[in-house]
Amino acid sequence: MGKRFIIYGLAGWCMEIIWTGLGSFLNGNVTLEAGTYIWMFPIYGLAILLEPIHNKIRKWPVIIRGGVYTALIFFIEYLTGWALQRLIGACPWDYSGTSFSVNGFIRLDYAPAWFVASLVFEKLHDGLMNIKFSKYRI
Image 1 (spheres, rainbow, N blue to C red):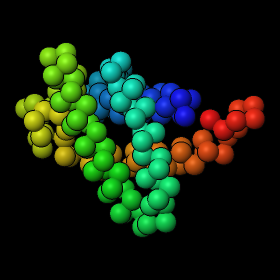
Image 2: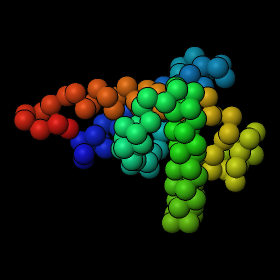
Image 3: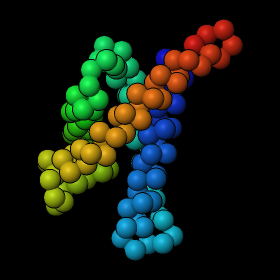
């Protein structure tokens, strides 16, 4: 379980680097400058909490599964953003002043990106469950 937490954290970081790099490109920055926050590693690692949900809803239509995951991701993003605001006095991904922001913690216009990311998570989860390191599953 701990290994999967680390893999989800690293995968999330990689996806965010690609996302912010593409955002740079769309804003005219051909160097594809990208970034993330150290805080995001454990937050992306929380994808491990979606595994039992995936196991229960895997036969549901993709549109419903993606919607469920997107809602849960928004909930986790809001909750962790709020918690960081309380703990350290700032939310690293402050969306204040942007369109479709909810209290600066989530952006509703990111729903399609989270929908796609959640389906990537399903594939990653299934792949990880088929990998064995020594005699134990990761």
